[in-house]
Image (tube, rainbow, N blue to C red):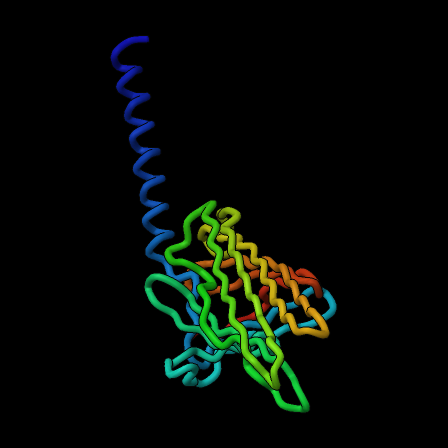
Length: 209
């Protein structure tokens, strides 16, 4: 192999490395969670339609939060440069009264998204009611499965899987609620697809002013 060929190969490799670095920087700088007031998204799984909508801000545990409706299921989020935090509440019902056992924020997503990164968070608390101890355990895991370029959005789409387990333990019973789901994110758009126990939903319309 002559010197000219070696220089050409090195030049091609250098260009590829620069392009790769630029893609990494672009992903890190992009907003994959563009949730702001009055924005909405519509999803369809072939049978059912689900709406995600950002409602008016709220105050949760003394902190201003975004109110996000996932098909009517209200979530309270705090967004910063470092993370998306979500409010979680676990209640124990006794003699018709709801007693909060856990009221706290957990980290839903660490930012920026990093391919292959796995993050977990957990909360444990207990209360005493009428002489009995009630304990709650909350655990959460998010895993950045990977990313893939899609022509539809001219961008890398991140695939994130989630696992959430809520456990409420009292002397007479133990209740465990476990959920798993997946979400796909495009920069500047947000969730473009999600898969949960009810189906595989794709984005069909959205409004981002």
